[in-house]
Length: 340
Ligand code: TRP
Image (cartoon, rainbow, N blue to C red):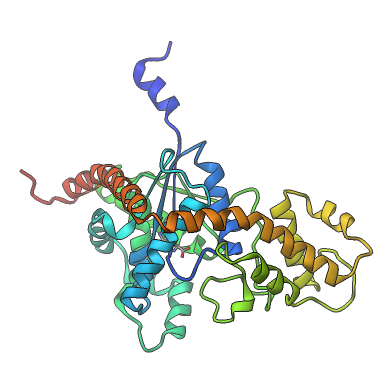
């Protein structure tokens, strides 16, 4: 026989949490690599998805543009099918517990660890005139995001794996020093979701902050733009449509088509065998455009309803704060803050 408590534990769904920085718009890469999987996972897990606006502030942003981009992102979450009935969705800056926990974690993180992070080194080189404290503290805020909710699983791309490792180190260290407090989270690399690369430089990842507009497509782009960008996509020498190391351009397009059409890479190779690059590029563009058309329509609809966005974001922040406060209260007690 199982007692009540055990039954409850067994029933408890795993908690997944992920965030995305509101810069640019959600690209095909973000969509296939992250948001589409979140949309699927929200039925299976207790899900928390947030707009990492505090992280985005580590780079200088023009305030009114930043505010609009953040709002747009929220509308894009909704348009991609993230469902406020099933997932908690909010803006990070609306839940003060993130910053509060970050401070306590800061005091349990070494400068040496933070300054060794590859992304910190890369970003310092890229923004040499603005190596602010937040840039170095970025992964500690990320650790706070994750640990606040006792998350079990954190879907991240490869570029964030090091930050997740640091999160685990901080959690383990804190638990050893103060007693069991945090769930040590695992990374979650989804089964589907190949890395999507730039259409112009197919060995680099498709990035929402790429200055070259032809490098990517976004869920908010119209059909004409999408097809045009795919027509212009850089391909490789030769004429065979197959996945091969010396064919990064065609490989990327095959991965995109396979992911959008839910087909295997082998089936895509067969489908287009003997056809030219030109035909294939148009087929991929049209497939992506068809997939994004309803998303874009939803996006425009949500964007026009600011009140609805405000309501969902407020509800989400309240729910998130309630959960976060449970962990934070425990942490404050453990470190020895006075409580009455
Ligand atoms: N750093 C992540 C990125 O740029 C975004 C992020 C912030 C995040 N906090 C997080 C992802 C917590 C997962 C969990 O992709």
